[in-house]
View 1: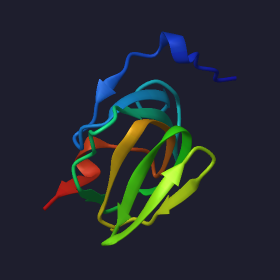
View 2 (view 1 turned 90 degrees about the vertical axis):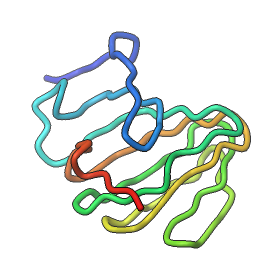
View 3 (view 1 turned 180 degrees about the horizontal axis):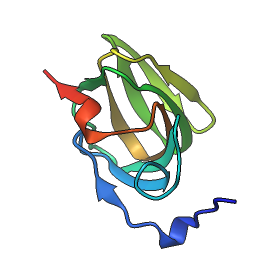
Length: 117
């Protein structure tokens, strides 16, 4: 059984600038096909526009609000929204109000699968 306590995980900054707490990923669990993390972005900040060649992502907004952009299409997102980011899709998220969300990647997140303009 694999259980990871949020309070025992060490946050880090991803290549796109997100403050991430990995809950289950290649670094802390025997995962094979996906990863789960919590991201936090302060009001007024945003991730750097990027894409992942391999990973499909789901974002689930826990709190705050933001402006999500995927391949040029923009939409406001709030707590309770679930977002699909297909592999290969350019994306970024701007925090309008302190933003927290779950991020699930399949295959698991890797820095090497993050590409910029």
